[in-house]
Length: 183
Image (cartoon, rainbow, N blue to C red; front, side):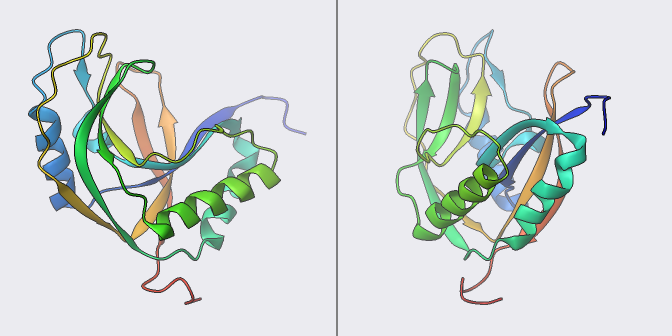
């Protein structure tokens, strides 16, 4: 048995392709927030599909296998509004509609993670991309130009929080299918 207790912090996420990434970074820049607010660095922009949390490194293979087993369909998200969330002190780009394939992927990931004994956040799915953190006061948010993101895959991500900003590393990536019935 591994007694070192080494843990890894993981989550499943959709990562934007370069064009969408540029538009999300532009949406973040348009916020014009003052200190102590901090924009999320461009390379960390993502949409979380399932947050796992800290698990023993020895169980990383279980998380990889869960990702490999997914046979979800591709989907499009329309981010159409900025939202301020006071408890985590963040500003996000929010999608108001949840496509059925995203809901199905979210449910399947959460179900399979629970089978492995990982306690998950019971909050309902709210598709979003965090654009800024440490937003201690409600900002005046202008209208957001709608942004459509065609999601064709998802990744297992490692989060290292030791520095000034979190660093995210791709552990594994899997495609979403043109039709969920494909195998």
